[in-house]
Length: 237
Image (cartoon, helix red, strand yellow):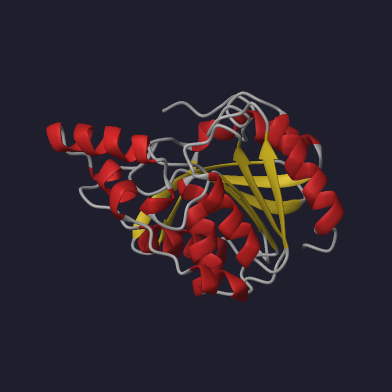
């Protein structure tokens, strides 16, 4: 896997939670960790990384376990991934970084802050669900059929997990930006449930957008992140 030309040299690697994770790092300034979704890698955020670096942030963009430059695994659990990211932050000595997660990355961010409150200075999540029931029924039906024909441990993960109690979100007191596309594969009611239970949340539903159209190759999410951080997180170190 070739690192993006905007990154500082080769991908770095770190041992966390008994596994090795590859990650990109770019820029100088306040730290922000960016966590991609299921079946993706850190290149999902190439546009946002450039924007955030230009805005004065230092971006850490790991490939999740079994994704990207990391060796694939035979089984996945969001709890392990959340511990990976907690260990990543601790091992690199990041002091209350912002975390932005798309899809599975948002699940990981929520679970990390639930399990280790106060680790993050702020959180932003896009297209995130608390349980498989928060996905569009047609999506579940389609991928269940595909997984029966050709089992994929990453598909199994999103069809069987997570199981986050909405009440547990009430313990997350940091600022949280919650976004979803108008035509997202996450139910609108699920996004509203998440925002409702987070004490310090801002919810934005993007008209005409789907699950990832305002993120991959788009400047929309980067602009929203920078605006959110400027308004809510000026004291994040």
